[in-house]
Figure 1 (cartoon, helix red, strand yellow):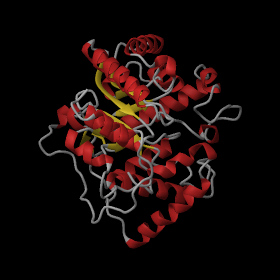
Figure 2: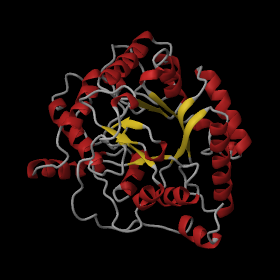
Figure 3: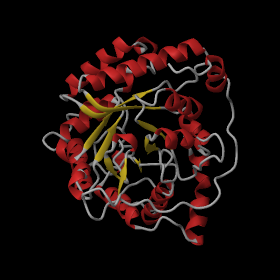
Length: 370
């Protein structure tokens, strides 16, 4: 723990409410692959892909990566497939040859396009990707969070328990190590400052020991709480090397007290989750026969370009369900960052995505200003 006044921090983390309005003025330049980084130092290099430095980890990561969620997978799978992704049924689908073929195709195409990081944040995802990545870990970094054995649940809020859960999860997935262990912090607001400190202490203890043991090359956290995230980054700069948080097509950086102030100060790598706002950005259903697929492809590329216009973000990590979607986000990397007036109008029209948010994803509105 730092020497900062605990009460001032308590007031900041527990007592803060609301989000300041306003946008950062001016544009930001296109971030390109660092000139002094030799190609041989970049995992799975592809000349058509852009690579960005993942903060103080020093890893050069593709400017768009593969997120773990496979929502709407039923729209591209053969008839008879059950589940849309991230459901209990996915445990059964782990033995479904058609499901594994789809995940293998998406991962293979991602590797072909120069994508070099996959993130998995649920048991189903970890077990699926550890299967299809077997024998080709040298082409892709693996991000890991077995969220049901992490401090989202009170029984896992000690360093000892977190490490036990981590070891058990690695064993079940057949993994010796992961490139990034990013612990998922509780989603609900914690108003008891003592409990909040207990969660933090357990998290940093587990992350530090996992790294010392060589089971996690790098460490970090993910959260849906912007105020807490900013505090954690400043409080534990050694253990928090990478963070994950929502950054959608409608997200903007706050002019003051932005989490990006701490990210830049502490040189933290950033993966942006939910770039498509739980798919509410789209008019169609992602199916190959959707009458909206061309428009939705364009919306997806605009969203990726918007996220990448903030150079503090290393990469968005959309969940992708088909080869077409992989090709589409890779194409966004080759398009200019700055949008023309017509594209800006189309992106602004994406405000309708808030109206389409499912009830359990209304919290995404809180990440319009970051």
